[in-house]
Image 1: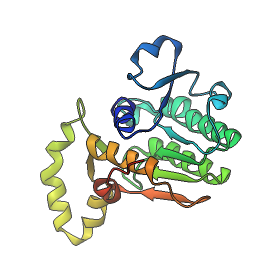
Image 2: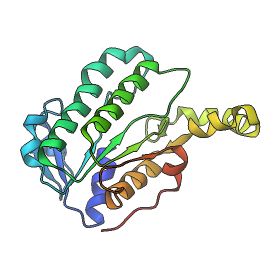
Image 3: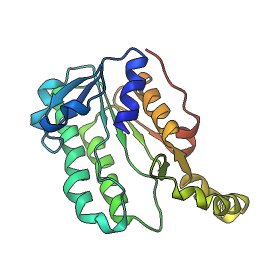
Image 4: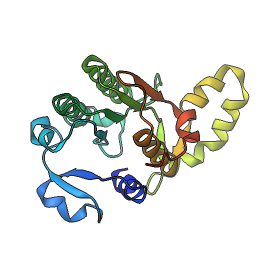
Length: 208
């Protein structure tokens, strides 16, 4: 999502810095400033943060599946804990975190780890926006569109309507719009705002 979000933020006048490994500096979009560090080590990038800024956390295991529980524990959870530590140390104004919709009958390990990320943010008392999509449809991730007839049936039945809405699909465009909106329109200080699937779908882009 980062490679889609950065150009949008730049186009809206934001100054953007991107945390990258040294070997990936060339992949940083033009106009953004690379910050070399380790997403699993908050001390490696805390000094690059400034009080009053927004930190957007987009680190996670690619193509999540029930078979990747170990990666969720070794990458996803340490990375949000590192970001919380760095944000607290730097006194950033706002942390944006992509969690996941829950409860759900599958992906229990993924939901557990993302929920622990939610809890870490809450314990730190950070001002935060937590987005809770279920599945983001985009390039290379379009197979869930085959499930749209099933979603339509579930939405038509009172007993499954709430689940269909909570676990609905969102597009990469909707996610980027919601992320940009979160950056430009933070919640009140000391609070956590949660954007569920419905909120993600209707979010506008907030300008500077």
